Image 1 (cartoon, one colour):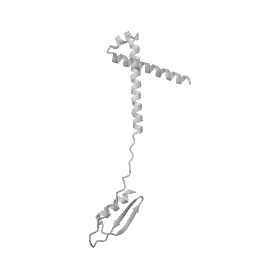
Image 2 (image 1 turned 120 degrees about the horizontal axis):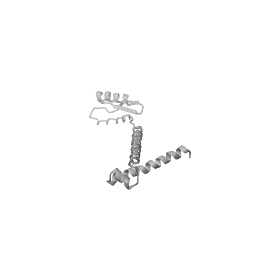
Image 3 (image 1 turned 45 degrees about the horizontal axis):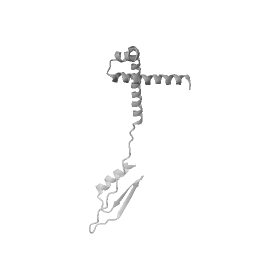
Image 4 (image 1 turned 90 degrees about the vertical axis):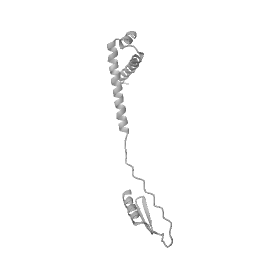
Length: 131
């Protein structure tokens, strides 16, 4: 370990100890002056460390927000391919044979005799944008 790492670890240890002291003082119900007197700490020292503890907490929250924002991503997903239209049952005298099969990429469209022209046109437009 180099000297800078040791100093940084020492500062972290002090900050951790003082964050506990600040929490103890704030939860004690005593005034800061009274708590400091009972723990042989000068109020000026306490306030100095409280400022450092709060600054470290704010810095930690900022880093957490940055990490969260970095990890949050939105991606546009392609629309699922439409399912083929069901083939209507044949009425007497009506033809039901396959008259066309269109394929674009992974999408396909089978057109049967007697299919509604408006529906076929709409499906062709959808197929054109499916790729």
